[in-house]
Length: 74
Image (tube, rainbow, N blue to C red; front, side):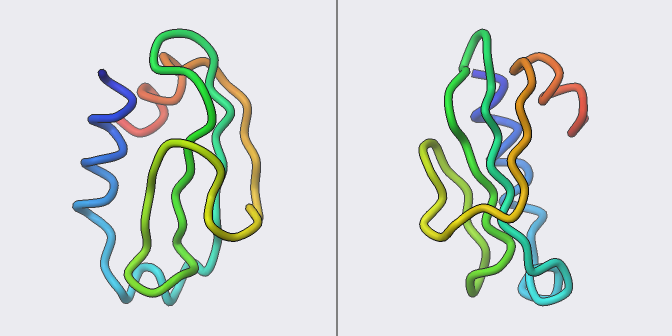
């Protein structure tokens, strides 16, 4: 779906330099289509993303609709 595709695009844009400079883990609590808990880890080596809780505690938790999430990143 659109949320998973957005995360794939984000992951493709993440560089090790970006991870080093950001040093944050973001958790998204999304409602609607493709809803659920998703994360972007910009703290661990190489960065990662996925469905579910992040592998380390989140620094920021955002709650929004999946449609707003896709709009925010596009």
